[in-house]
Length: 96
Image 1 (cartoon, rainbow, N blue to C red):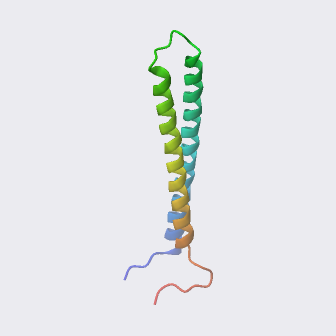
Image 2: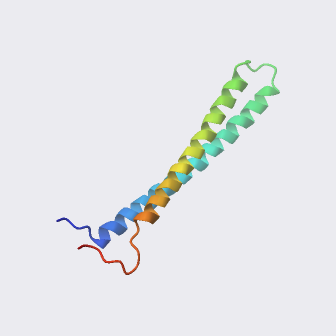
Image 3: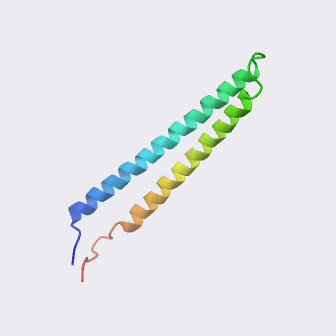
């Protein structure tokens, strides 16, 4: 039988928490991209020389970025719930 050491479990938990942090950071970046795209679309809306397709295209991209941010945060929360559920309780015995 193969058993997992406490050190390996801690290392895996640390890696999982780091991944959760990266997902959250990526979500923040995507929200920032969405804000910038919307600001650019607003600016182009005031510019008569801008092509007519540019503002709707920027709005679609902004919506996609915002949607990606929501999904990244959802993934981070799911991983966090998994990490919490996988954490052994104090005093619990491992093994047979």
